[in-house]
Length: 427
Image 1 (tube, rainbow, N blue to C red):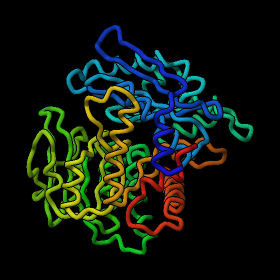
Image 2: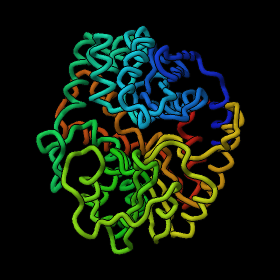
Image 3: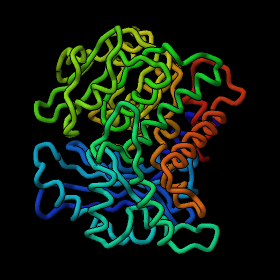
Image 4: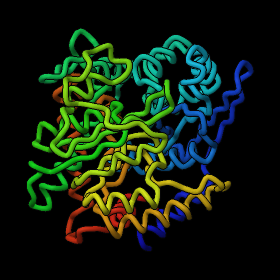
C-alpha cells in the first residue's frame, strides 16, 4: 500500500470517541476527539479559534496518533478544539476554558492528556486552569494514570516531573525572556524541534545549513524559536509574519539582506519586552500576508495555524526558490471551505499534498512539530531528568532518529510526505 493510500484509509476511519459541548454562557462549542485509546490512553493539545470545527478535532486527533508513533509514548491520538474567538471576547476566554475542562474532566483524570495549542498557553492556561478546576497536578495526568506504563511508579511521580520539567527555566544568549530574563522549556521546545528536523535533513543530505535563507509564517512560540535556533546555526531570516489581533491584519517584516530575528521576537505583542531595533521594520500589513513570500529563500516554516498552505501559496514558494518545508504547524495544507465531511477534507488536502510533494522536500508535521509531545513522553519515563539541557537533548535525539528513519535509503529530493506516511502511518 502506498503512503498516500495508507493516509487516506487512516484519516477516513471513524474515531473511537467524540465528546461535543455547548457552553451555556457564550456561543462557544467544543469537541474532544479521541481516535484510539491505545494502551489505555490518548493525548493531544487544546486549541481555540473562531472557525474551529468538529472535523478539525478529528483530523488533529489522528495526526497526534501518528506523532506518538514518532516520539512516544505508545498511546492513541486525541485533540480538544473549541470554536470561540478569544480576540473578540478576551474577558470570556478563561471562563470558557474552565467550563470546557470541567466538562471533559473525567477523561483528563483517567485516560486523556492535553496541553497548549493555538490560542491556549501551555503553562498559564492549560496547566493552571486544569489544576484549579479539576485539582490535577498536570494536564497530562490522565496519560500518567491510564497508560500501561512499564515499571512500578506512582502517577504522582510522573506528574511532579512533568510540572518541573515543562516549567524548567532556559536562558538564551541575547534573548531575555519574560520570566526574570528566562524562558521555559514549554516556550521553546517545539520551535527547537522544528530547527532540529531541518538541521538533521541537511546533515543527512550532506549539505551545509549555514548561509541558507528562511521564511517563517507565524512568529508565535513555534516560529519564533525555530527562527532563533536556526539563526544560531547560520541561517538568515529574510521574511516573517505575525497576526495582529487588534487590526485583524497580518504584519510582514521582510528584508533580502536579513532580519534581526532576536529583535523581532522581543517585539512580539504581549512579551512586555523592548521594541525592535532600527531596521526591523514592518514592511506591510494585509489581510492575506502573502507578501511574506516575495523574497528569495531556501527554507519555509509554516508555523501559524493549520490549513494556510494553499495552491497559490505553493506557486509563490516555487517562485521564491524554496526547496525545503518543515511543517511547524499541524496540518498546514488547506482544504476547501465548502468541505462538509472528513472524506472531502482528506481528498482536498491529499490533492494539495501530492502537488506539494512533487515540488518540495517536506518534513511532515508529526516529526517537525513533535517537540512538546516528546517532552511529555520523556518526563513520564522513570529516571528522566527535569534539567532543561537533558530535555532538549532528548527531544533532539528523538527527532534525529525519526529523520534517520524517514531518509534511510531514500535519496530523492522530493516525495518525503509520501515516504513519511508509508513509514509512520499505521495500517
